[in-house]
Length: 364
Image (cartoon, rainbow, N blue to C red; front, side, top):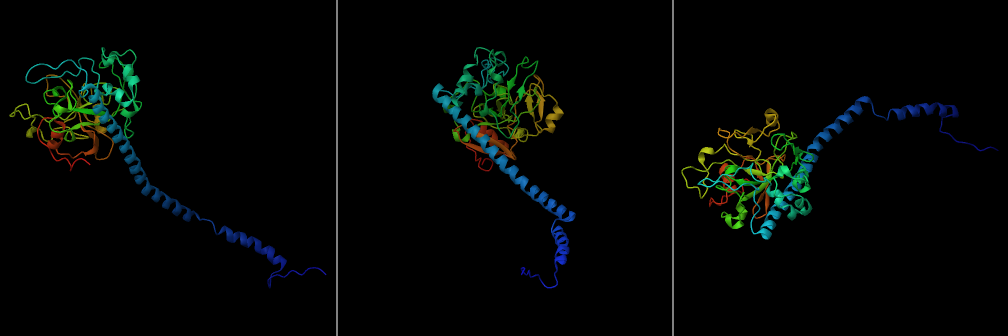
């Protein structure tokens, strides 16, 4: 006797076969309709738009920390240089400053090698340091060490990697690698750094000369570069304005003695705060594509001796939102905001004003 197969009431074998297509149709109804799919895609897009700024902020925060760490290494290298040499590194190797009440430094004289070249051994770049011929100018180096990019000189937030300064007239066609760090040499002009000194000056000086205190003196900061090879800014081996040197352009009060430095109230709003957009601009020996520089938020002008454009100064610049990383003469680092008070910044750069200003609202 064959086995008896029980089926639900009213369901024959034929009925079961007929039901199979129905189950398939019911499963098909479980998928997304076009409208539902569009809703899901829209929701995912909104979530991505909400998350991307957070990811970008997190990435930039990490980059800024790396920039600050590089700056810390450079500040400590400067201090270590003084331990071995008995003096802080010169801002650059230039011809001796002129004699007289105001002692002028000509940046395009002498070897023009920068303070960054001098501290290479202190950042584990002794081999690169040995490739420089210190009897020759930066534009006459047989081994071309000035064309080497040093990782410690690069801030990942900027685009200096792979960028060079090369100009037929200014460099003789020589390539100089770009970086992102510079030293404050004066609260006034670059050529007046000996008369109105910052932490690093052309003649060199000991930390004892920093009468305002190491923790109250800005020493280093950041610079941005442009992809234009004729723009000098960031050329690390070169001791020019905007390459490895910064000056604030806050004039000394002409009604006061030269020492101590006294910031002139007539120049408030005309100096070079972080990421300055004017009315003053970075004064360079060439400002290629001036309109493009303005669009890139890196305005510049061309220095012209004997005219109203005869001043050499440049602002610290970075791609970090709101300000720049800075290092003080005692080695500690901070973040200096764009809206810093002109007088506070001038006195932080000057080493002999005798004013211990409160910079806490502007540096964190």
